[in-house]
Image 1 (cartoon, one colour):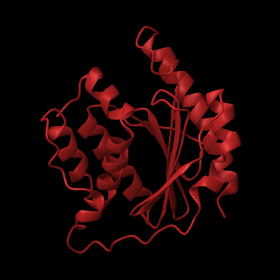
Image 2 (tube, rainbow, N blue to C red; image 1 turned 180 degrees about the vertical axis):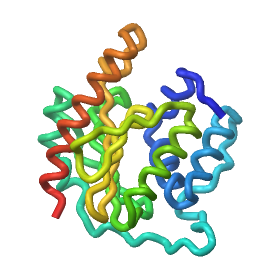
Image 3 (cartoon, one colour; image 1 turned 180 degrees about the horizontal axis):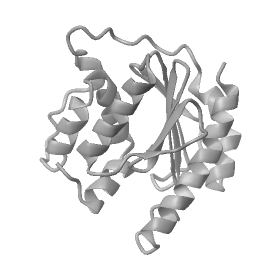
Length: 206
């Protein structure tokens, strides 16, 4: 199922939807994201949360990362990239990820990090997941060379694999989500800002 531009923006601009989609993407082997997309316009939400779902048969449930996500992206980092003060970070465990979200009082200004360990054990498994997720969202997977072991820009967020650690970064600002601006320009600005932040995260991963 291919998402329209408006549907993609609604998907990206809802923090709860993003967190649920990410958790389901991994705990259900991508089926959860497909369900979320299929049910996205149906009014009452019937998609189960990541904590309520089971992993596919024969797939071990990944352990928590044991990493503090708010130490990988600091409040100072978020304020620098958003250009304004941010609230105290919101921490949440969304197995297999630990999440950290910095907001500035509006959904239009937000930095989100998710990090998990042993989500993927091979580069090829990471590649397959990114390509499947891209197909489900109706977008092209965009490999980003020179960032960690593997990295992909996918539907407005950056996925990076380094060793046994997988993390996802998303940056939202009014400029990056302004529909009046050229979409390609906004995409490149978002990729540049998110990549710069990812380089800091990579230096802080143990």
